[in-house]
Each structure stands twice: as structure tokens, then as C-alpha cells.
Length: 491
Image (cartoon, rainbow, N blue to C red; front, top):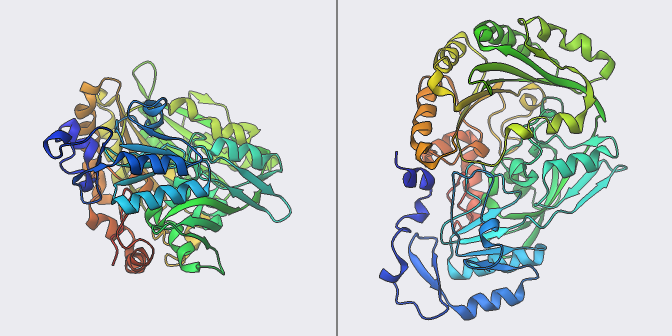
């Protein structure tokens, strides 16, 4: 697959964007070439652009502006896109202005929160990026056990702020992740087996809809919109404030890592499958099949037990019997340290990701992974068996937009590279490992989608919730302005 095809996969709205603008328009001085919602090229008149710039409290960046190149970067550097404009919003009023401009111009629009963007859809070529990264307010109310969080906040800030009060929002496993996109797509994390998905803990939200209105979504105001935000992604508007339910955890938890040689992989994973199936909700253990610095491969278990620290040794004891570990650093630690423990292994760079849900870790799945990853040529491919279940599975599929409540694990495959010339090769390696695994999966996590995801697969992924979501999309975004996501077409 050619790299330009990879970077554009799933983004039909960008069709034809590689053509030189001058072949389509005779631009006048100051005109900004751009891409419309229909994928066709258009020109933004300098007066319109300047008018938007004056209405914004934040900066409006175009190619050549200071900070433009850094502002367009996202964590997943596989996507090197160049938007026509970047609106760096300072508050909800800026978001309203940016949305109204995008709608009036018929402009391809991406929304960027924390900028992690595994799927690459928070930036676009030739369109407008509504950048929420400067909106980083956090307000913890320990009495009401709630947190109000703006959309530019990353997990590292929210974890630290909430832990100052001995509280948590169950969000994510890498602290550099943005809270907004994670939540709207569902939101797995180390505490979600105990307290549910991030979206299950979303109590209310302030949303800028496609027509530029600020609306409140809660149990009493626009409850249908709140339902859709809980797992429906960025399809329904730009969220400028999230209100989460807080839970008492920490600051001390019991956790860390166990590391096993890959020669024990089959034995360890089969035993892990049995232990994880009977684990209490307080225990989250995910298995990583990862390359090591000495060009070998290992099996790592990422462990977090959020029950009483004194009970930690007893609860994790079965994990220590899975094999003969090369490393065992399990013990009392802080929740913040556990959340940061994977950051060094997840630096910004180019990544290609495939994933899907399984209801159990079958021998066929384990055998397929061990046999494939035993190939030394796959040194740039990692596999994660992320444990879910617990409290997540006790929510009815139609209670929120997030449909897949039954899986025990998400299977995630990640390929990475340093040289652009290696991209195609690594992508094909990942696809080769994924091919025998895909028939064993059912559904996928939309925050890991965006590469090869078809409209049909998105429909199937939302199950019986899709029809309701499509109806709500028609109500809140009939022109599909917010389409750079796991897109739900208006009914």
C-alpha cells in the first residue's frame, strides 16, 4: 500500500486534495486554498479569514504563521497533514465562532483535543482544525464527587489534580492521552473494570452543535445527546466541558509489571487467560507482547489492583505463578505512578494500529499470536491484550451509545517505524499478523479505528444503537460537519 493511500485511508472527503490549487482556481492575492466538505477545492477570501481572526480570543494560524508547524502535529506522526487554518480556541466562545465559520464556508473540519489521535482524524489536509488544546481547566468538587474538565486536558493533569483529593476519574493507561477523545469513544483504563468506562462516568457536558449553539447535555437537559456522547465519538458536536463522576481511590495502589521471556509465552498466556477470567473487578491485568532493546521479545503483564493495598500481595499471587519471571516489581505504589509507567514506551512517532474485541482468550488466538510473533522480522510490531469486562459488562448495551459490553479483552496490534521508507513494510507486517486474528474478533474500539474502517464496519460496530445514533446525528449535525471520526451518517 502506498504511503499516501495509508495517510488518507477512510477520509473520502479529502479526495482530489493532492491536485495543485492553481489548476482549479485563479486565486487572488491573500486567498487561502482549502478543501470543502464535498472534497472539492475552494478559496477562503482574505476578508472572511481576517473577520474570523478578529472574532477569536485565541490565535488563527495559517501556513507560514508562527507555531503553525508545531500546532498541526499530533502524537501519531504517521499523519503529516497541513490544514488551511488552525483556530486555537481559548474558550467556548472561540469554538462557537470557529464552528459557525466552518459551517458558513462548507469547510472540512477536524476537532483536536489533547492531540493523541491514534486514528489521525484530529487534523486534516486543507481544512479547519478547531484546536482545543489551550482549554485546560479542571475543577474538582470532592463534596459532590464530581470533576469539571475542559477538552484540552490530558490524563496526567486530571489524575494529579483528582488524586490531591484521593479521588479518580477512570481514564486511560497512558498519561499523555487527552481526556476528551478518550471519553467520547468509550474510554478504557486501569480502573474501568471497577468503575465502568470513562463515558459511563460522564454526568453532563456542554456542547457546541453544528449550528453554533451551546447546549447542555445531562440527565435532565437533552438526555438523548448525553446518551450519544457516551461512546458515539465526536459526531454530535464539540464538547467544551465534561462533568465526571469521581471515585475514591489511592493515592496508594498495588501494581507494577511482571516480565517473562517469550519462550514461555504460550504457557504464560494460557495461564493468564484463566487468571484474568476469574479476577475481581479491582484487579486489571493486561498482557503485552513486546520487542525488547536487545532485539528479543518478551511478555509483560501490566498490573493494577485498586482494592486495599494490604490485600495486594494475596490478590496478585496467582499471577506470580504463571511462569518464571525475568522481572517482578509488583508492590505498593501510587496511582499516578502506575498511570505514568507506560509513557516512556509510547513516545510521539508514526504508528499503524489494528484492533478488535474478543469474549475470551481462546487457545486458537494465543497460538496464532505466539506463532506469528516468533518471527524475528516482526520486531517493529507489538500486541496488547487489554483486559476489560467487570463493571463495563454490567451496563446494558443500549444504556449508552457504546454497544460492546461483553468482551473480556481488546486485542490491539501496533506497528511503528522510524524511517518513512519503512512505513509500507511495517503496515503489511501488522496486517499479516492481524489476518488470522480478525475472524476471532467482534467489533472494535473506535478510538483505535480510522485506518481501514469502512462505513459498513462502523454500522455493525454500533449494533442496535446505530439507528438511534443516525437519527440523533440528523438532528444535531444534518450536514455532517463533524465527519472526521468513526462517522455516523445522518439518517
